[in-house]
Image 1 (cartoon, rainbow, N blue to C red):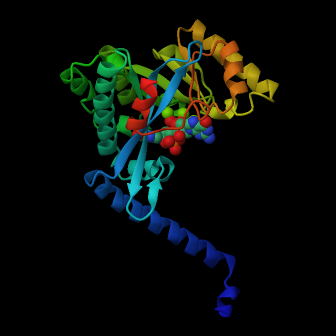
Image 2 (cartoon, protein in one colour):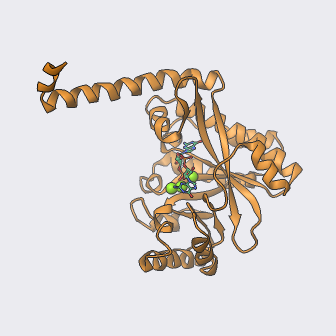
Amino acid sequence: AAKNNGRNCWSCFTSNMRAATEIRSRTAYELRSALRDQQLYLLYQPIVELATGNVYKAEALIRWQHPERGTVYPGEFISIAEETNLITDIGDWVFKQAVNQVALWQTNFNAGFQISINKSPKQFISKMSDWVNHLNERGLDGQSIIVEITENLLLDVHELVVKQLLNYRDAGVQVAIDDFGTGYSSLSYLKKFDIDYLKIDRSFISNLDSKSNDRILCEAVITMAHRLGMKVIAEGVETDLQKELLTSMGCDFGQGNFFSKPMTADKFETLLLQ
Ligand code: C2E
Ligand code: MG
Ligand code: MG
Ligand code: MG
């Protein structure tokens, strides 16, 4: 084994690369059966109305219960799903799950309940899925669903993206810009698209208590959003002080571990019943 210590950095590098590639192709392979074998599931994180503490929105966040690896987070498989185009099937599955769930929670808790889902850029480029039809078949209002997209997607104003966004708008589906402030910061898309929510990225929230710059930026985003007729959701709220500051700034909604971590639908229901 001592002989191996003589390996130069290049061979270490290439063997690490090879290992990483192997993990990725293995993950891609396993992901296909994961969908079929029902190893994917959704967690729900409450989006809290700051002025009242009411919860009538939740973000759906995907997880993979892997037979050997345990819980696998989206950061480890969404980009692989995009590369292999499996993201279309996964995205359709997420949407259908969310629609079933929101139908239930609208009946049992609040007729205005909304579930927010994440949509990858690749999902826009691939075939137009018939999500809107699915909503109509279930007799659900388009407003039952919020679609979260990233800023970067809107910058590259692909024809299909525009078409799909307009389709959603026609059906009443709401649109949120996710991780706002971290993408290419061009504000021109706010003018071009009818956006309902800005989700301020958690990197602006985490130091809100100590950094006056972040406070100024949050205030400015909230003012701008309101004047453009949009609502603001602060991501990654972790402390009471952050919640208080955001509330006093007039931020509409907060989401984060301070309120609750993402949880199973069952746990979420228990929370809603309280
Ligand atoms: P995102 O949409 O920005 O989701 C917020 C992420 O922040 C989630 O990570 C959530 O668990 C985490 N989070 C929430 N509150 C806190 C907090 O107080 N502190 C900290 N440190 N983190 C918090 P998660 O679930 O690992 O998801 C990561 C990303 O994966 C999401 O970021 C989203 O871009 C993507 N993703 C999740 N589910 C889906 C899905 O169904 N489809 C697609 N295409 N992407 C998804
Ligand atoms: Mg999101
Ligand atoms: Mg986000
Ligand atoms: Mg984020």
